[in-house]
Length: 353
Image (cartoon, one colour):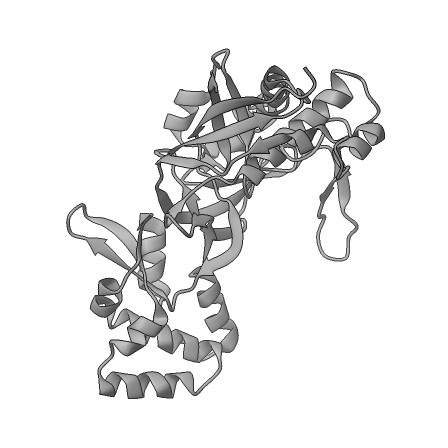
């Protein structure tokens, strides 16, 4: 019985945009943004810089070399302008085409190649046009959800279940869950990277808001995210009967559902709800799960509560320059993109193989 292996197929449905960070970005020198006349929407056309230079005529190549002779942010803006003025060539060479929000399309048209004379202003423009990539399968050239992201999200919920439901000591559980040997039950859990059923991404400006008070203009950053039109499948294997699939499902729902529902609660997240898209509120405020479903949160901007254990949270809240941070059991801000939160993923146990 101990050596029993069970395998499951899990359907993954993003119910809000997901960003699996890579540390890589689309720079405004290797993309252009233009309207596709077929649907009237903005798209980013990502191209290879070397192929772009090879496609230039001799006069343009000379101009390109002159721009590259100077190493400054201002010269980078000149390079942006150079590329933007040769949009037809860039689009013809593109290897990825990504839907872009109207807001970011407008930002690109207003700022790409803008002429400024101060380095600091140039750097600010460049920063606003950098787009953080979500993970793209190099073989498929499409976004996927990594098994490691799923396993990490499940592990946090499982850890919390051991501490709260089973009343084990936090440090004892931490020691087991951090072990690199077979004493760690998660060494017996294998989750594949996702198989693509449908996969699409889009680009928009993510904004940071205050959860419990009116926000002034907060931080913003541009992300590529997996869209809610996507759908994936993963294989989940449990070796040696180390964990039960029911425990995974229950642990995830105990941990994540309360966090998910809090964003609709005007007492705890008054200003989050005000910023959310009406359709998202209508669809998910009264979320009810099937017996075969569980909810998790993955990727960047998941929020500190999602990645920590209830009762043991020590979240640092910055209080301003030259002030010590305040320690809290919850985050004070939330990140939204396209008026939706980041990272919510509905998982459905389809079958046991």
